[in-house]
Image (tube, rainbow, N blue to C red; front, side):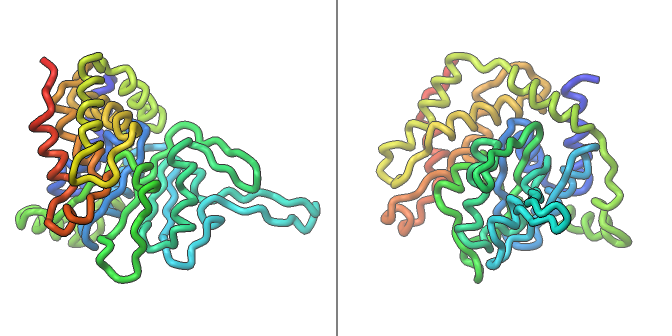
Length: 311
């Protein structure tokens, strides 16, 4: 079975549960295939958790863990802890939910910054250092974090270093009236995610990840990505610009998007389609720009218009 067919089956399965969001579903799946992590930010009840659960249930053999972030959550609740065995009088390590294939960090901005930072090393380096011991996170390790807007009570804004670890930030938004009516019909008797069956194995997803890395990315497009990301540096409305990690993420996500498109090379259009999702959340606006209503996504849209496209 071809790589494109596997990607299509995975996408169709998730879209059968998450109604009216085909573009967001594809981008989140592309983020997973690229080896990155995604932050879903939107208002409560828009389907963030449902999307994460649908992806996990679509993959046979994938371990799925969920952590509900709360103000009293500790780093050890995520990473794990050593407990004294009364019989052997030795400490035994009990791994935390970080040791999984897909981790749903639900309402991540409700935990304290200390607990949020427990994910930094794991997301950036695919490893966790616990009590002086390094533990490698092999294979499929995909963090899907959700958060409500920071204006809501009881939330802690994610620090810039944490935001930079997320390859993409996506928003679901409200669906159309027709799609919302379809959601009501789907859940009349039970939730559709409960009856979702796997359509791809864990090994097939790892094959998708390997295939994405082999998608051709020309030298001209590499310079285009560097120019696009580099244009955020020195921009008058930007206080903190995008890092080289943004360039790397943009390249990898574009390659993964090409897999879902059925192509074997990346086009400038694919880069432009995901640029805002990959770059915007890493930037911090200058105070005067923030108060004048400018957004980072608007800046990225302007940079796409002004940056020469390779031909």
